[in-house]
Structure formats: structure tokens, C-alpha cells
Image 1 (tube, rainbow, N blue to C red):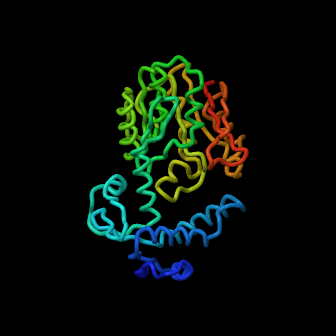
Image 2: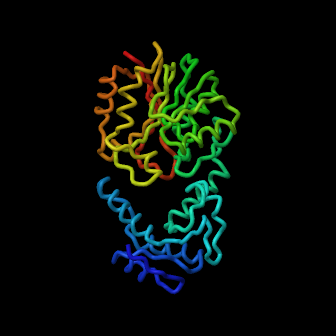
Amino acid sequence: MHVITVDDSISADRALRLIERGSALLWEGDFHNGKQLLAALGRRLPAVHGGSFQDQRRMQARRTQVLNSLLIATSDHTVSLRRAPDVRQACLEAYGPPAGDRLVPLRELLGVIGAHQLRQQGIEIPALGGRIHPHYGVFAPTRSEYVDLVASCPLPPAAVAFDIGTGTGVLAALLAHRGIPQVIATDNSSRAVECARENVRRLGLDVEVIETDLFPPGRADLIVCNPPWIPARPITLLDHAVYDEDSRMLRSFIAGVRDHLNPGGETWLILSDLAEHFGLRSRSELLGWFADAGLREAGRLDAVPGHRSARKQEVSSLWRLRAG
């Protein structure tokens, strides 16, 4: 990669031409002017909408590649530019202990700063009567409809509940808050496990959080899972909470959940139908996976997402599944 040093004197048009020729740009001007250049580059790129899902993914990948070509130099998590904020704590949370000099895309660094601010502020969860504090790289519960579905669904008799792929721990915390005596949450991401443990501890709830792939040892009366909704290859760290290539996690969960249910137990699977709108998975295919795993539908709750990123006609559902 050919890196060219640039500063406040460069125009957005020239910067874009250099990037399109294969160069990366190392910003040495004013920090806030660098943010303005990044925004100007974004305005010069095509908006990601229209066409097939694959077309949109290609456009998004191209947009990411261009915008990530504007770099910032850091030294032990410090940025030495005019008007640069103190990013040491934000970088510590995202990257771990300082390790000398590194080049970071400005776009990524702004995301690190935003994640730090969100972690400090937290997200109010009315059903919990408290806040969830997401860590960098862990999917934040800003889309509240899946939380509301779990909060409103009638609880079956349950002494033990599992939350599979817990992320921030929000659903595990909600199950404990609703009175289930023993809640065990799992995730295969060490970031998520640390985040979930911190959140349930902050809320004063008794939840065991385990780092493992899918199911913990033993059986439960209720098993809850909110897997990634879109069967496509993840690209970024946060993509893993949204994209599940070939529906691997979803299919593994459905195929294995019956073996971890107590007799008469119930599974709550929370899914958006977004993949169906994109033509990536059909409803009949999903129902076929249920049947192949020996699961029957015992009920379903639907919610229309109110989040600004929700797609038109999208519906999120809580599928209540039982063996049989």
C-alpha cells in the first residue's frame, strides 16, 4: 500500500482521485478538518440503496474501502494532531494495552470514540428498569423490539434458562429480572462475555456467563436465542452480530436445541424476516429446519421494528418452539 501524507490543503476531489489510484492518505492536518474531509469523501460516493442485496453489499464494501483509506497515526493510543481529543481510554477498550505506533483509519477511530461514549452512557432498557452498557465490537441493543418481545412473551414454568449468543447480556438479564431462578448465558466472543458479565453485575442480577460455542452443559426449561439475522459473510467485527454466513449459527442452534431442553421445555427463537425480503432465505426453508429438528411451533409473537435502520415491511418474530 502506497501511503501519501496529506494535510488541510488537500481537496476532497484530489483525495478521492489519489485513493482511487490505490493510495492511502495519512492525515497530518487539523483533526476536525480531517473529519470534514472524511464526510466530504462520503458525499462523493454513491449511496448504498437499490439493486439486489449482493449489489448493495458490493457498494458498501467499496464505500468502506475508500473511506478507510484516510489514516490517522497513533502512538501508544495518543493522537498528536491539532484539536485531537484524548482517545487513550477509548483505544484501550477497543484495542487493548498500548503497543507503540500504529495507523488507524479515521473512520474506524471515530467509531471507537463513539463506542466508548455509548459504553459510558449506556442504553436505557425500560423492561429492565436500568441501562445496558455495550462494549466495542459487541452488538448494542438499540433495536428495542426484540427485547420487548422477550419482555412481553408469557413465561413457561422454568427453573433454568439458557441465553445463547448473549452479546451484551440484555436478554439473559431480562430473564433473570422476570424471575427465572437460574439463568446461564453463553457467547463465543470473549468481548461479549466480558461485556455481559459487567452488565449483569451492574444490574445486580444473578446470571452465569460462559464463553463457549452455543450450548452450555446440562439442560434447561427455556432456551432463548437471538441469532444474526442475515445469511451472508461478515466483513467487519460488528458484522458478526448481523451476518451469519450460510445461516450456520441458526441451523446449528435449531438442530441442537432439542437435545438441551428438559421434557416439556420451550425454545424462544427471535428472528427478523429481513432475509426473506432480500431473497436470501424463504419462510418454508426455515419451517423445514424446525421440522427436521423435531420442533413444532407453539406460538409466535410479531413486532414491527421502529428503529430508523429497519426496512419497510420488516417484521421481527419470537418463535415459540417445543419438541414434538
